[in-house]
Image (cartoon, rainbow, N blue to C red; front, top):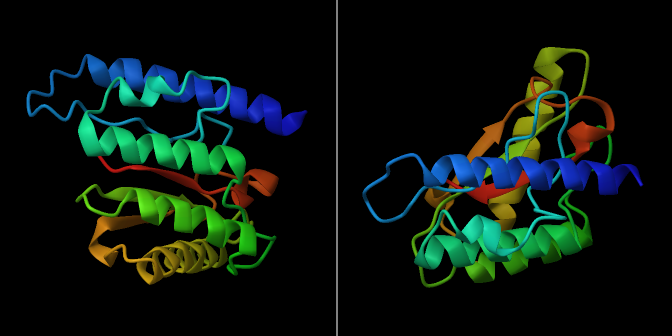
Length: 174
């Protein structure tokens, strides 16, 4: 139940971000991108659970829209999460990242990976968050995604606490 509520809130945030990006006046044809940033006080995966799958594509054209759709679908089926105090990828997370890597083949779309670690100690949280981001980037690289196409956003405990810090957001980079 709690996960459904979080996914609905994140889905609404993605729709709002998409609508906002559509009006950004970006004239390069790419439109902008769906933001996976969580609303204040919350977090979750970047999947747009509860939102129409075309919402992310409304602000993106071509390859970026296709990659965004693949990310949303993969994360909806199996979010990339971590065990408390660990940076090891689960087998499910590895499979999800493999699906995302396949979607990134044959294009130059870049993604942002936001990781968290809800330790009270800010430095300890930042270090674990960085290890988690590196684990994800390495897994994607194993499947053919160049490291320079993955922006690591290791937030430590700045944006998520408790169970929410176990979730990872992945989105097409702006």
